Length: 428
Image (cartoon, rainbow, N blue to C red):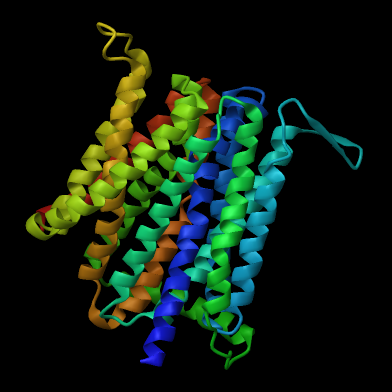
């Protein structure tokens, strides 16, 4: 009985980390600070979009390259909490620093003059890397806390708690802050940092580490050998290979949408910061609805069919967001903003089912005796090319002078993902 109570306390403490860090993704990366960066700190939104894409890409490349080392450190057991805390506080401190940046500033460093956007971007990259590393170390505890029979339940509980954290932080921001005032926009950074600091405390207090039984260098070697083994073994399973390649494309498209959704709304459709905040609430609520409804649909029509529905809906919604600025008022009812709201709702509706369904399909395709190995490869493949979508979004925006050009790469990625995925549906 006492042992179960301790285990449940650890599970709750571990789950609270998702609740603690989700506002960083919601308010900093996706909706508020990203739009503030491109609209206010950068020279103009085209330059800001290009710089932001560079920052997201640098983070993704760095995390992908470091994945084997992070895996080794996580596997070493006794070192996890230390590195989890370092990563968390790195993110928190850098997020606090984001509060101090204001438009039209410049900094003299070692005799060189730097625009505020460059320095702010560097600080954001540091915060984002800390966030990503913390997620990797926190995720590594799941296998210690759960069994094969309840792993999905515990993981889903943590994901749901993270969603609640993001939604509450959006609501607090909307109720307490008028984001038409630039000083209140800056306060978002302090809110996120304080939220992360406070709600991560139970994670650090109650999570326990096992003592390392090997030197770190042995885990580095073991991690590289595991990756090489996964590459060799996965090639023998053609359906898994096709699915993973398809996922590379449509997952990159999703990553790009949520890195630039708020930026596109502000720069192309002139959303105010308060409207962007409401957009975040709508997307989070629709994601919750979609996850509930499509979980039942998956059991009825099959995961491949369900995933195809999400992919086509995401593609059409992105096209709607692309064409929205071209459409003028129609009897003052249908406006570019109205169409974007519709697109945003359906993107949110399909986000959760797409991600949950992808994980479910991987579990169904993977041989029972290779689940750990192949799921490690699944996670690695999700990070390996995550920089491509944001990078191309920035390059296209810069080349054509409009953020709509950036949306083209998302449409292409979804379309390629659908074409590669389609044979899996036909073989169902």
